[in-house]
Length: 590
Image (cartoon, rainbow, N blue to C red; front, side):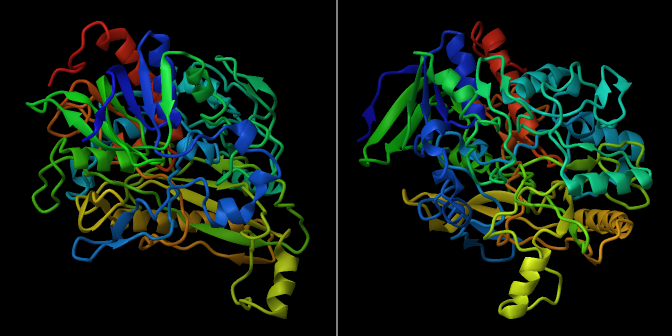
């Protein structure tokens, strides 16, 4: 029998960006907070220092900061008629594990998602008519607007120390920034990072073709910075060890150097690592959460943590699995369209070209996770007419290069032998002579893409594994066909000796890494009939259960998700402090 612990005001599952934000904000409001993190403690001063953190074999190849698939994983298939098989080795995406979560090893690209995403169905119906949206595409408005989230985007950017250049400052379009972004009240906290040669060449070519290049916004500090909570960030050293690694100079705005230390300084916060939550507990009528059950992974002890409020702040896929294991909500059935839990799972898509130059040296080992130049002309540019291309969504196109690490980075033209003398000669020749132009594309929800529980495979606790059913649909294929043509036109003007051209992405594989941008499964919306949580990320079913992270996104945009993940976390914390603490109950009436 599980040992029952003393009750606390709040129990938070997961200590990454969202868990850190909620722990800090709610503890400052006087609430007693217990945070349960299934992985180990990670302290930058101990775990992210050189030479330890620059171990490419350990962190890139053996994914030391990521989810341990020997304990818990997913089963994956492309279509509902296939048998799903377990992902035994991480590939397409890399969920984090341990204090900091995926925020420890992210690249730092930090976008704001505007009303084009937050009000997607309304905007597309207004522009193109209802018939433009395919019947099997289950897009919906999020229930929140950009105007509501703007102050919280601003707060998150200041906490994370984001470097960039505004393109729309209080409605005034500013050349050099992203002129297609929704208006921001303030300039970025820090100026943009230095541009690599690849970014300069790309921006020049894009501008000549009439596009609007701008620096990618980055939570890599371009100069030393102290955030509003007193966290001190160092300047980026362009070391080329961002994605999959912690930052040795505290230049990357991760939760490990910002919100988590701030939360842990408050005596109201108790953090328990190696604590694997297996269930959200409910009262007798299933309308209120009473706490969680978890296992101490160090000694196997089962414990119960009662709480007045439960906040799910783990990785989005894990939040969905925990709700399914706990019997909270009805699991989505694609055959009938009934159920909401697991619905609207989305990933991302993209394509790219590699350019090989005889007369340029890019020094790829001098890099950071999210520098470079980007164009949004085929993404947030509402003047771009999708009708001739027949797709919903958009793509960013960028050039920068995040690393030149010796094991991973091998840009080679097609036809290069896979081993031997010629392979070595080509590797030497092109290591400093190649660059990439890549796109990141949105993925719209489809009734045949979803999450549920696998009937066969189980984790170390005997619980069914999460089953992922996903593939690209015609909408995404048409989008990558179009954006591949744009990339190839830009590449064709840049004077490269050889170009490996971009092509459409027709199907998804879980094997090669693509992005850790998984969304959906616990979606937000306007009513209990179309969503798991309301606009404040509060469960419609249980008013004292809140679910955070990218799992609440009803679709996936071309942009990286961390910006809205952080903004929504502050938005939720504010709603709890302002309204829920005074009068516990539904914040939105059904």
